[in-house]
Length: 415
Image 1: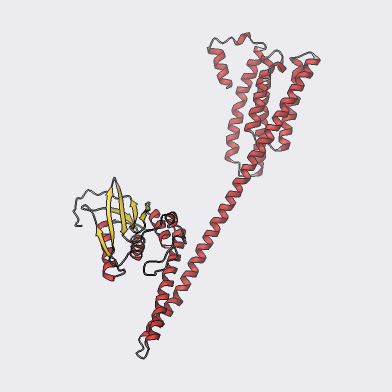
Image 2: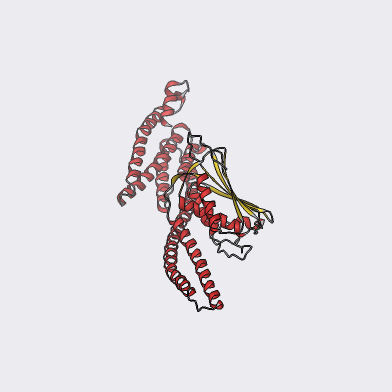
């Protein structure tokens, strides 16, 4: 601002020479232009070393106070030099006080210190420009009113910023507590789930050995089968808990380039071969190969979960479709069934952990509501997204979208 004023005075026709006290204005402007860079570079230096030691912090506060007083006295001297009677127009003095009050954050005693220095400076300089004792008194009263306004604005700004600072610190502390609790929960979950698998495996093994006893009657065989089924169900739940904990903890996993037609066809063949469900499973691939980067094990868990859900809510004569397509540079994998569908009111919650949308399957299969939460975790870690569209009594379609890897070869694939 000082440089701009000097430039205008030197290279334009603005009649600065007609102003009263032009020599004093020029000297004050030059002095202000010389002093300002010291504050600027001093602040840069102090910011650089601000957190190193307490002395730098104290010097920084002193620099802020000095700069605030520098701004106020600059506004004050413009008022004195340019105006014949300061109290008739204290615009620059007022502007300087408001500027400091709004943009500077002072402690209570720092505010009083700034007010004391500003009031004292005003009272000491005023007699040189206004010789009437009555006018001096009126000017001092106006200065007092402006300084009271400055005090009120400064305290309001301090309270506002202090309140925001305290809220921010509280949020940071809560976030830290949540993160710590989440990590602890995942660690405990992983340890407990891992330690539960061993006794379950032992129980299942004993049950299988007892089944080989030729003297076992039908009722006992049914009981052993229930034990094995319960062990399998508990193991599945434990695996889901471990998977959830691992996905929360691990930010990355190994990926490799895969041709999706062959990969999906292999998964479908495994389901058909092992007869994991009552519904027929059909796969529709693409004419051209589609490559992308995935973690083979994780993505198979995603597809197994989606296919399992599709079968769970489909009748014996229904079929499940796995459709691979590429549209506008994106890969889409649809897992579509024609079963009972999902009620519209449950759709917003199906990807939640321990979801309220968890339901029994058509054949009484139970769920704890972790499967689809794990699916979304894994898909998002692949940089993709999963969506669902469903109509009751008509079926459900889960759609995964990902980014392909382009290849120049044009090998055709059979659907």
